Image (cartoon, rainbow, N blue to C red; front, side):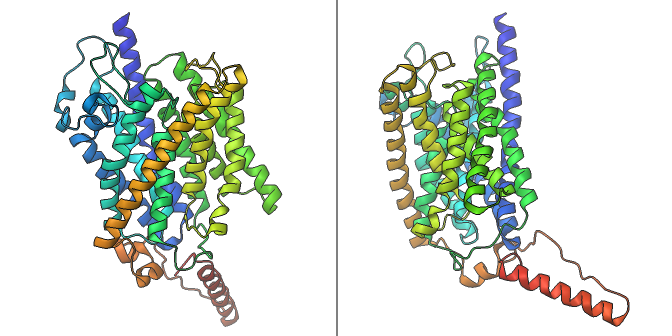
Length: 451
C-alpha cells in the first residue's frame, strides 16, 4: 500500500510539473499581448530568458541553497554546496517517497516563474542583456534565500534544518504568496524606481493583442492548478481542497474586478477579466490550504476589487509599472497572505484558526511579520542590485531603440509580417481604400500600437 501511495503521489506531481511548465509560455502570451506590437517578442524573450538563466543556476546550486540544510542552523540559507550540481538527486529514495529529482524540478519552475514575473514592470525599455544579468543575480541573492525561509521545512528527525519563516515563525504560505508574489512585486517596484519611466509615460501604448492576453491568462489558470495543487506534494484530500479553493477564488476575482471596472470606467473589459483572474490567483496562492471555499470566494473578490483600484495608483505616484506587476502581484500577495490571519478555517488542510474562527491574532501577526520581512529584504537588495547593474552596464535601452521598438532593435525580428497589399479596381475605389489604410495606420501610431 505504501508503494502504491508513493507511486500515485509521484504521478500527480509529474502531472503538476507539466501543468506548471505551461505557465512559462502562458506568461509570455499574457505579457506579450499587453505591450505594443513592436515589443511583443521582447516580452516573450524576457520570460524565456529568465526561465533559462534561473533554471541553470537552480541545477548548479539553487536547489541546495533553497532546500539544503540551513547554514549554521539559523534558517537563512541552505548550504549551496550540499547538493552542488544536483548529481545527488539521481538516486531513488530508500523508502517509498517522492523522488528528490521531481521535487527539484517542480521547485525549479517556481524559481523561474518568480523572476519572469518581474519583467512585466520594465516592459518597453530595459536592455535584454541587463535583464539576463539581473535575473541571475536576483535569483541568487534574493529568491533563493527567501524561498529557503518559506519552503524549506525541518526534517522529522531534526537532522535537517529549514527556513525560519516556515519553522520558527510558522507563518502559513501554502504555495508562495511571500516567496513568489510579494517577492516579485516588491522587486518590480524597486527595479522600476532605478530604471525610470518610459519616455511617453503617462501616455502609454495600448495592448496590441487582447485575445493573446486572454489566452495567456487561461493558460496561467491551468498552470496554477498544478502550482497550488502540486504544492500539497501528494494525491490526497489536501490537493483536492486546494484546487477547489483555487478555482473558487479565480471566479470571484473576475467578478470583483469587473464590477469595480464597470462602475469606474463604464465598461467591463477582457483585459479587466484577465487581470482580475490573475489577482485572485495571486491572493489564493498562500491561502489555498488554509481557508474554506467561502473563504476562497472572499479572498478572490477582495483581491479582484482592490487590485483594480491599485493598478491606477501608478499614475498618481508617477511609477511606471508597465504591466501592473506591483498593483497585482504585490498587492494581491499581501492581501492573500494577511487574510489567512482572518479567514483560516481549522477544518482546512493547514488546520489553523484565524481571527474570525476564534483563533485570535496569533496567525495574523505571524503572517504580518513574514510579509514585512520579505518586503524589507527584497526591496533593499533589489535596489542595490539594480543600481550596480545600472552603473556598470546600464539598464535602459537608448531613446532611439525605445522609439523603434525592442523586437527589431534588440532581437532583429518582428512579431508580425505586414505584407504589401495591392488594391485593384476603379480609381475611386483604390483611392478610398488607400485613404482608409492611412487613417488606420495614423490612429494606430498615435495609440502606440504600430511604428
